[in-house]
Length: 310
Ligand code: 13P
Ligand code: SF4
Image (cartoon, rainbow, N blue to C red; front, side):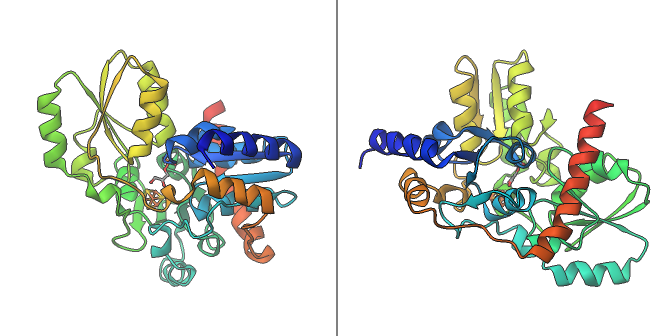
């Protein structure tokens, strides 16, 4: 089936089943184009609760679809490919969080949403790349257990006087670890008029060379607001595709063409169609885990919303 046919069939099925498609900014361009809403982890979690629908088809990695399932117990969440996971999230088992809590009984536990639901169930509050420092600074405790991304912990530490303890010590995203400070410095020299936007999952040396450190949706906001005509982008290449499509009069240079998240690319149009047609690949989270994880996610949404309103 060609992609036009598939798009038509997906649109018809969406209407029939009262379904919506949520997609992350790293999705393939054809998946981005068919989405009802495209965004970063925070946007997608928020949006999942706002849409008028029965079914949510989630084109992202499993922790994102899990969050949608946790926040929407009355809706069914489907994933076009249930094997799309996040290797960063796998680096923090719930057991490791429990152990760290015993070792640091006075610390508050702030977990990046890039974690499995079982780990989230051990957290006091979650955060995303868009609000990590804001969430940490909104809490009363002075000691913070933070995981699993070591670079996001470093980023938050630069913006907080609290003691942030990374958990595990060296958690990382293999995609963002590919970016090298030397390459960014070379690109900055070549394109001296360019703004450098990088994700906080990049190494500290890369972050230090950036004009702005942003979540993926914050990159959209900055690209729109900035007077600059040229940008060097330090994140997964799906983001560059979206920026180029939405701001055709500006130039976006990927800091690394091979920065590809293999799991994010697993959702093809054909899989979306088959998932909707057969209502298969249901994302399920055990109720006891979901209930505890929901409290940590909702606390993040509350703190993050409050700070945005203040
Ligand atoms: P964003 O929330 O900034 O989109 O990041 C999610 C992610 O997985 C980055 O690698
Ligand atoms: Fe996980 Fe990295 Fe892929 Fe984001 S880019 S989903 S952190 S592996």
